[in-house]
Length: 118
Image (cartoon, rainbow, N blue to C red; front, side):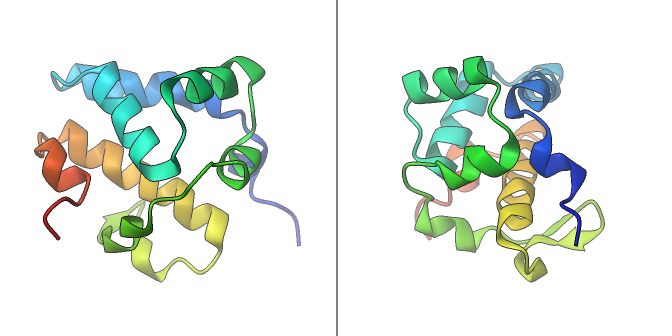
């Protein structure tokens, strides 16, 4: 089976789109970085190193220091697919991130995006 194309794309090539989507809706790069850190466990320095190395998505998630256990609370539809029903682990992680960035762009409060008080 061939890998999905996004697995081999560099995370740094998509990251500016996450930031642009957030900023277009009045949110910030800092909030995008906070979401990524919450989801993956990367510190700001580690995230910047991954961006600089142009790490691909598959490696980005495989190398994540600590995937947040609360990410299982992320529910909903992204690209027409329910994120909780995605069986392939790497694709599910990518879609979790997409969902969180969508929630940010839609104006959701950070504490809700980061699944606090759940």
